[in-house]
Image (cartoon, rainbow, N blue to C red; front, side, top):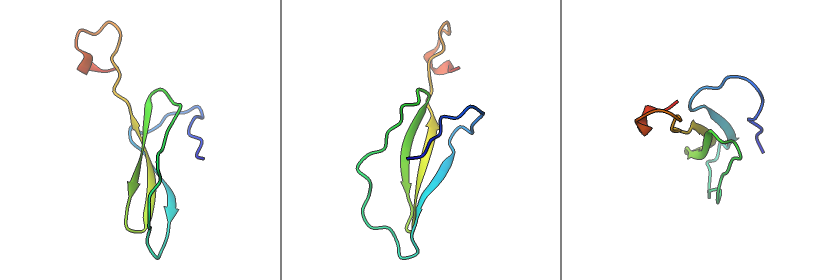
Length: 71
């Protein structure tokens, strides 16, 4: 478990190293989830690492005419 819910400012798509293995990585995680409304988690697999990436969701701003306009 990695707690990313503290107050503060965050980069739009930070990566957090969660596993590093000199002999390589075999297998994969079944799923990753988050209860944070504006972040979407994903796992990034390297030959010797697994990183958790938290992407900022694009959300529609109430009152904007174009949903692609964002916050």
